[in-house]
Length: 105
Image 1 (cartoon, helix red, strand yellow):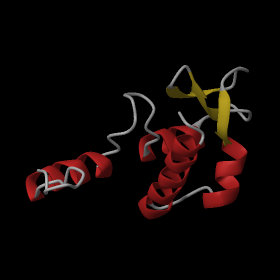
Image 2: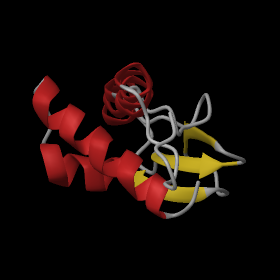
Image 3: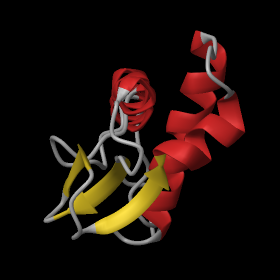
Image 4: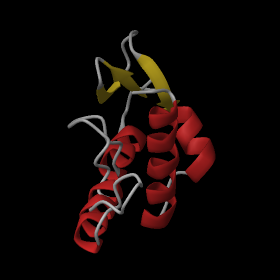
């Protein structure tokens, strides 16, 4: 929608669609979204050196070298303990997703 002499203005339907995609992590490519399930998997890993990494635009859990380390298993344990609730993991996933976005991934 355009107003005379001004930049485009979004209508309410466009605003609703934009906010839904932003809430759903619309700026992330598939596989780049850090989820609560990924964090649970990282905590459950038997590899002491397991970590969550970003490599080629995808997030994965590994104990191999390579990729940008987002968080190690040990660091996540320090933050949330051995038996975190869903709220704690959701908060950590949000913080890590924000970190990924700030790094331009």
